[in-house]
Structure formats: structure tokens, C-alpha cells
Image 1 (cartoon, rainbow, N blue to C red):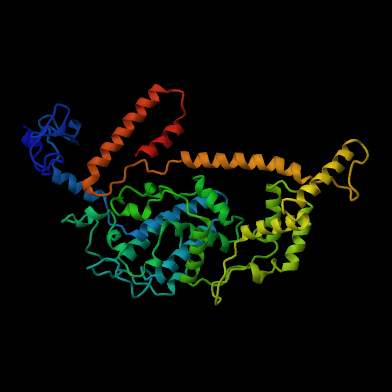
Image 2: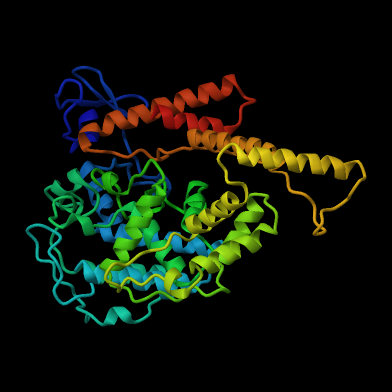
Length: 476
């Protein structure tokens, strides 16, 4: 009876290497030589689907492989990045960004990138897959990328299908070569390309989003974008978990899409500048005084966030005027220049406030405390009723009191951020199989982690669920 059930399953045992399988009473496969129990089980179809005279038949291994082939489809690395960009654009639109960012800006940027790197939308595409003819079915002209296209589910699948073309290499080929290396078609040769500096990476998805935000002149700086990513409002960490089921994620795909940290400000800023030069974008819309990225408005926002007096903004505006930092030529990003410079709007606004504070208080750890002492004396006189306001009719600003209020709040916020980073679940909930050789080890380890977490939650029922999710990331 066991031979009929295990017929067709010829995988060797991971312990002794023999091919001699039996079936336990629970339906699990075990090795008759070393009695090693594996996770494969006897699968039986539902009896309600057949008549009374029909008998129950077990599913053979070959039939299961055919079903896996039916569910999985061929996909490429660029298709995965396209799906992630689509999800990030939808998240930004849900946060209040104009819908044109997704349909009219980011989608066009992505098509220009695919064209410039000769992956699609060109008459002479590059051969991404080794040993295969990569000929698009629908060859589009180089100027077609300028047209607008909806960044929807249908467009993603249709456009990607045309860019993949007629290829004989399958992610689940008959010889099993592609499935052993990765779930995608071109992950194995993705790292072997000569011009790797133009390859797509996960940090570059944020660079694309930042360029699109600058184009539509949204009041989201690069620091704001990274903060939204760190809080999970924009898909980035474990974004591959959002792939559809027919896009099998396996092997070397993890080296491309799996991230366990938020990229730094400088890396994303550098990628954005290089992408703008690569896809040859024209000059961006000018940053006018009514734009929220203008330093006059951005410094006002930062003054309110830092709990600084509003009258300091008048001095900031004067510094902006003296240094010509408010002109369109200084603030507008033009990739067509000989030496293009992508402005750091948030850093410039913060630097303007620091310069104004230094002009007022010198900030040499000596003068500012002397001035703070004098201001405290005048405030005490005002409290005793000698004078309620200053000569100009306003209240006195005390740098010492401001520092005593802001510094503890800043330290608490920094510790809270560090705790949130330490408790964040960087590992994916679904196990990532690096290779078929380590599949059993990874699944057993994840099963052990689940058992330990359930046992621990029973011992400490009062603990929050979020803590155990974060602790699992340290064990897996």
C-alpha cells in the first residue's frame, strides 16, 4: 500500500540519502531506512466530488508538479520592480498626493528607464537572458515612451508581457535549471551583466518616487519620504511579500528584493540624481515662492516643529534674500545642465535656521548662555510686574528654557525611534527558500519558531502581540 502512495516520489532522504519511503498513520512520509519523517504528506481528493462507486486515489508527484506549473508563470526582475513602484505610488496617493503622480509622472519615468537601459520600449533590446533570443512581440518606437499610460493592474501585466517577449527559457523549466536558481527568469544572469551601475535596486524605487514628488511639487521632502517608509506607510521592507501567488519568489530573487534596513538619505539622493541623468529628464518645474518646497515656506514649517519663535522667520527671509537662495535658478533641478545639482530642500531649510540662530546667539557654547542669562533676568523682572512686554511689544525668548524643553523631548523621541527600529520585523513572515538544498532546514526552523512563539504566548498571556512578532525576527 505504501508503494502505491509513494510511487513517483524519488527524492532522496536528507539524512541517509536512500530512496525508500513509507507512510505513517498520520499520512506523513518517512524513510524506512533511518525513520526520518519529512513534511510531505499523502494528499487525497475530496470524496464528495466523485460518485459512490469511484475510489479514492492519491495525487502523484508528477501531477502536483503540473499543477505548480499551472499556477506559476514566467516573470522577470523588471516586472517585480514595476509592481513595487506601482504599490509605492498607490500608497503615496492614499496619503494625499495627487493621482497624477502615479499615472502621468512615475509611470512615464519608469518607461523612460526601461527604454534607456534597453530592457523594453526600444527597437534594439538588450539580451538579458543568456542563450535565449530576446525579441519583443510588440516592438514600440523610441518616442512612444513619451505618451501617457495608466499605471494599473492591467497595464502592468500587459506592458510586462510585451517587454518579456517570446522567450524559450522558463522559470519552471523541464530540466529544473531555472527553478533551482530562482523563481524569476533572469535573476541568475542579473548579477552577471557588465553595466551593473544602471541596474534597478530597491533603494532606486524610492529614488523614482522622490523624483516624481519633485516633479509634481508635493510638500514631501526626502526626509519625509524616508520617515514614511520607516513607519511602514510606503511598501519597502518585505515588499516581495505583496507579489501575486503566480510570481514565485525563490533563491537568488531574495538577493535582489529582500532588504533589512532603510537606505540612508545620501544614498537615495545620489540615486535620484543619477537616475535623472540616466533617463535624460528635462528641467523640472520651477520652485516658485508659492511652492511648499521653497525655503521661505519650508523654514516656517521647521520653525514651528522646533518650537522656535515666529519672529525668527523674518530674519530667515532676509538671509534667503541676501544669499539669493530663493531664486528659481537656485532651487530648480535641471538634469540637462553640464553639472546638474539636485537641491536638498530640507537640509537647506534647516541650515538657514541654524545660520540665523548663529547670527543671533553666536552658538559657541559661551555667548548664547550669557545672552540667555540676561534674558532670564528680564523675564523675572517682567514676572514681578515691572514690565509685561518688551519694548517692541512681544514676549521675551529664553534660549535656556527652550533648550530645557526641547532637549528632553528630542531624547525621548530618539529613544522611541531606536526601540521601534529594534522591534521592527525585518524578516518576512513567509520563509524565503535560498535553494532546494536548504528548503527542509528553513521550513523546520520556521516550524520550530512558530511552536516556541505559541508556547511562550501561553506562558505570558498578558504580553502584547507586537512584541512576539518582533522577537521572531531575531530567531529566524
